[in-house]
Length: 306
Image (cartoon, rainbow, N blue to C red):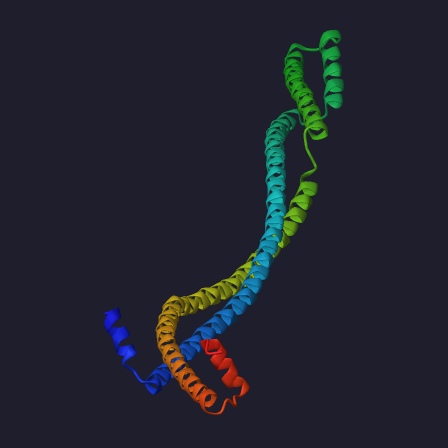
């Protein structure tokens, strides 16, 4: 195939060779322009990608900072909520204890009131009345029927006095419970819980705000990332054209070199023919007149005639 092609070239005229060479040079020039256009486009894409990456990275850094701040607010909120849980537990325990004591006091008061209903008087007054009646019963001479009535009064007074004494004991126990058992820190704990709850709500709102901002910025960063991917997808077909064009240019240059070589061979033959003609003319001048130009002398000397 190559021998046939070379044979075809050797049969071409100088004009045909020059036309073919110009055609090949035009093709090479056009493909080089195409290649340069591709490189320029790729450079523009790369520059654009670098700008997009810079914006995307800046936004991702901002997202990281916003998320970090949101996490700080979340940690503060969770810490407050933990304290609130502990305070509520303490408050509930105090309320439970106070309720238990209140129930105990209510039961004691009920018992005391029942005893007061029985005693119908103070321990002091009942004790004095009982002493008087007892002294009368033991020391005075009274009729039998009065003595029986007095004995019944003494029994009634004794029962009422015992009830009054027991009521006093219960009242004393109630006072002791009031003095030692009730915790009055409920209001203080409620204030602390409310204050922490308000702070926790603020931390929560700030956390949500920063997470929302982070989502917005992340979405913007993702859009830049999509733009970058799109740019790469546009670059890919351009890159795929480079090697085939380079191959075509290389093949065209090889073909051009063959035509140039053939043209050089023709030019060399023409030059040799021209030199032969000039040599013949110089020899004729030398033989006829001996008057020679510098070029004639040079030719005769190069051919060994002088």
